[in-house]
Amino acid sequence: MGRIDRDPRVEEPRTVEDRFLKRLRKKARKGLRGWPIATVAFYGPNLDQATKVAVGIVPSENAEVEELRAWLVDRGDIRSDSGIAREILEFIEEHQVRSLAISDGIIGCPHQEGIDYEGEWCPVCEFWHGRDRFAGQRVH
Image (cartoon, rainbow, N blue to C red; front, top):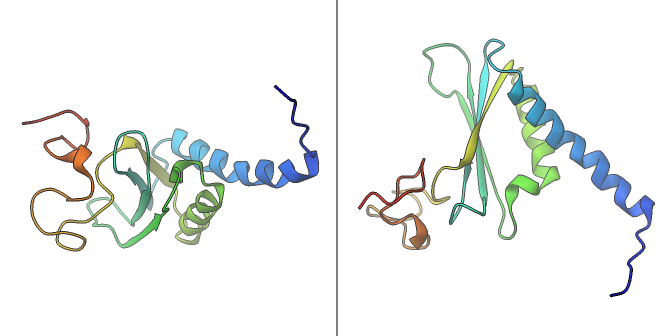
């Protein structure tokens, strides 16, 4: 196997972008620090690949989500997209979020019932047919 030498000038922007991912994770680890709270949920065609992330802003206790924004990718895993992580961070900072909750994993299909498809199960994401969306386990 040949060795690939990488130019550090090419990799530096990736390092700069990674700081946004680290800032999101750090903010979530701090726990409940007041309101508003941002909720971050990942969705994908299976338990291994997230293709959608939805971020909701809850302004106060007992309130409903006030602002909701979603990001999608066609390929790859959205969780490793530092550009989207930066946009999420900007979105939550714009809303002066004090606390952040992130789903542990992928919590269902990225398609919305009644919007992207009709019926009980998404015709595109067969993995989720008969599965609990939070546990990923079969229920039928």
